[in-house]
Image (cartoon, rainbow, N blue to C red; front, top):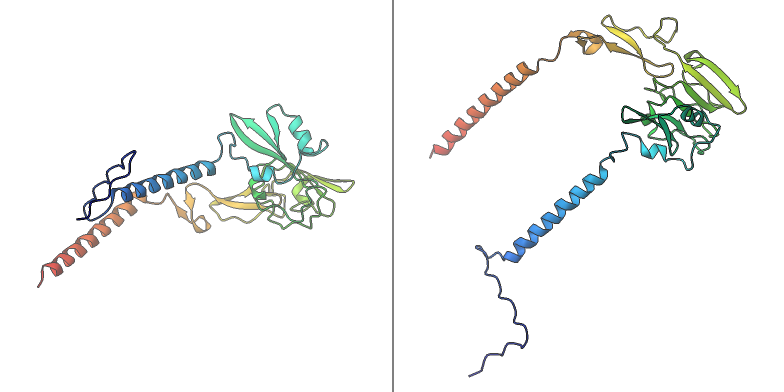
Length: 262
């Protein structure tokens, strides 16, 4: 009779775990649990990386770093930032610190070889000063500065007119190869041809250089501000809940009758 093979000398092998009910091996379950835990940790890490840093304060970092180097010393952005004690330069941006909150006040994109405005340019809508000089920019579209209601100083290449035309600014001057647009006018003051004809229950509001919008007066809303009052959320939810419950009970009764049949 053949004798069984002797076990190797040295450290004995650990006992094999008993299989789980259904033939599953406990090692497979732990492996799946470890993979799930690793996936959850990776997802959490990715979420933390995508969240803005606490000190960012909503500042468009990609826009501020889209052009290398700091603003030039003679730019309107540098002068504006140096004249205020509560501001600092952050890349090509002048950032203000008011009430513990950071806000973009100036953007210098001069000498950045721009042929078109950056895709994230609208993120600088709160800027007070902008410098776009020394760039081969063509005439900009009319809605390029939509929402730039705080803009007071804009410097563009000489080939680029002031957005909204000269009537949209208090003062337009040229010096060298640059054009300075200063003091954005309100197109809703009644003296400009650009003021829109708003509906009866709406009022004109500025929306950028030479641009305006009609805002519904409270409590009117909807198309041409013809609807009055707030949306009836409680009534809508109660009606929706009642209809849903009725349909659910009907379907439940129908399915139960069919299941009880032969």
